[in-house]
Length: 95
Image (cartoon, rainbow, N blue to C red; front, top):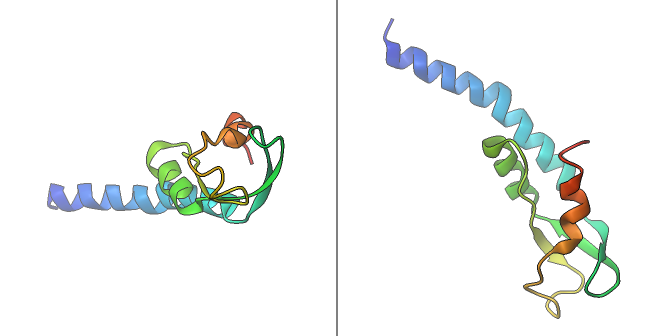
């Protein structure tokens, strides 16, 4: 058997059985909007997290990189430091 084919099969199985479920779990975890406390406005904001980015980064890095896709305080607060995500990041990926 050709070693290149074996190596490709191992990589393919790793993607299917490890990376894909991890990425999909993070995608489904963050796909819906939520209310988060905005420290700049000192009130709750309706926020949508970029679920695709969270899923891809979780699959490739082992933990999600979170960023806001939409916020009820934008465009007024566009470009904010997104400190409202800190409590979610501190969860450490727990479900």
